[in-house]
Picture 1 (cartoon, one colour):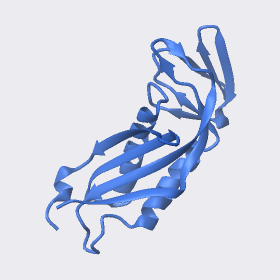
Picture 2: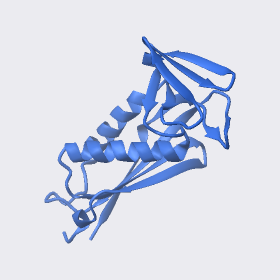
Picture 3: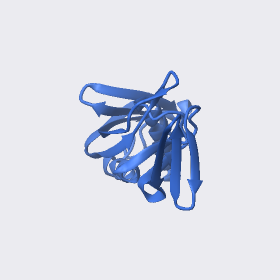
Length: 167
């Protein structure tokens, strides 16, 4: 039997700038106040819970802080040319050129900074951090990244289906 916990609100958010690419074009630079919803599924531990809410929220908040007030750089873009020179990122798209201090950039190993790709990256980061913290009972981590009210991208990472076994 599998159980599910949901985390949202209370600091599970970050403000960041980005531009996504679509069909060979690039949006103008803009920002969002992103809000996360995290769903963690798995079997119950000996303490009869999937995960300690407080510990899980602390972990997700720390990941959000890494992204807060940063430019979200899609390092694996097919359309952007990205180079790191000294302590600055240079990003070009056609005739557009951006130069940003390295400290203001969250360089992510994604191909586009869409809500869906951010959700996918966050689900993997959260799952890895939970696993490193000893959570061996989890079967999936699902993350929703809301860019604006009523507008979110979701991704589910199936981690260990056997972990949802009988409790």
